Length: 129
Image 1 (tube, rainbow, N blue to C red):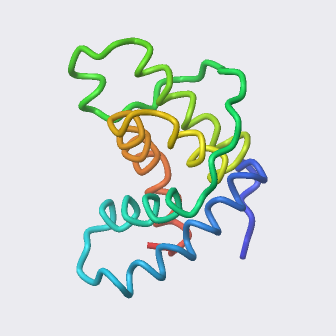
Image 2 (tube, rainbow, N blue to C red; image 1 turned 60 degrees about the vertical axis):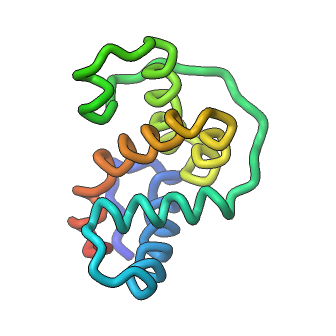
Image 3 (cartoon, rainbow, N blue to C red; image 1 turned 45 degrees about the horizontal axis):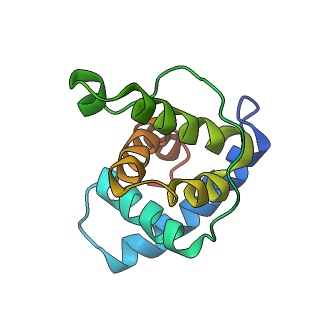
C-alpha cells in the first residue's frame, strides 16, 4: 500500500483496518450505498474495540455533520464529537471508537457520521470503496 505523506501514521493504520473491514462488510451487505457501508463497518469495529480510559480533551476545527451545524445543539455535544474525530487522527481509529462507546448513542452515531464525511473521499481515492 502506498502511504500518503500528509496523513498521520495512526490514521494510515486506521484507514487500512477500516478498508479491510469494508471489504468484509461489502460481501455481507451487498448493495449498500458507500456511506452506509462505511457506517456499518464503523459500528462493527466499534463493537470489537474495548473501552479505554478517557484522555484530555483538545479543540479542533469543526467537522460536524450537517444536521448538527444546522440545528441548535448543545455546544458540549458538538465539542465531544469534534474531539472524537480529532482523536482518530492523533491516536487512531480503535482509540476513538473505544472512546465513543462511553457516550450516549446520539453522540456515538454523530461521531460516525462526521468520520464518514471526513474519510469517504480518502477511501474512494485509495480504491477501498
